[in-house]
Image (tube, rainbow, N blue to C red; front, side, top):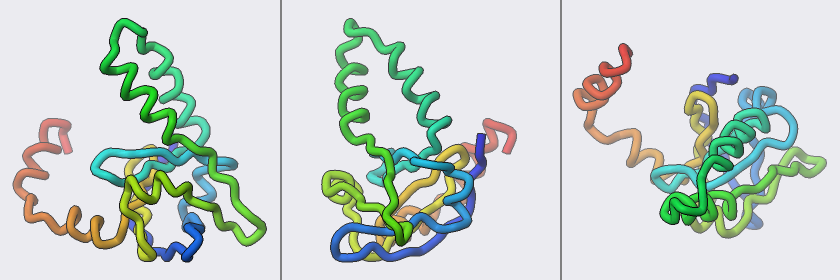
Length: 143
């Protein structure tokens, strides 16, 4: 499993095309998956990381109607990234709308996946003055 880290600023063109940063691209492998993530960002996963999610989603039974609803929403937002000859991929309009992506975007490593943020939303998120809370929360995990 990959451990993605770092932040990379990029630009999306007017048609909604962008490139995955080279430092992240190699570890994502062929045909990565993109889908809705938490906090109105998008998640980009390798095929192997996505397979783990698929297997967990398969365990949701039709009796759990709330989880089934969210399973359907998540799977409806999931796309395989297909790059053109210039290494760009077209980000579907529904994902651009969900994450409120404009021209300037940020790719951020998030362990086993990469997050894609609108730059202004990322700056707001990352600049919150929550250092004490961060250390307290992560301290529960020995970090």
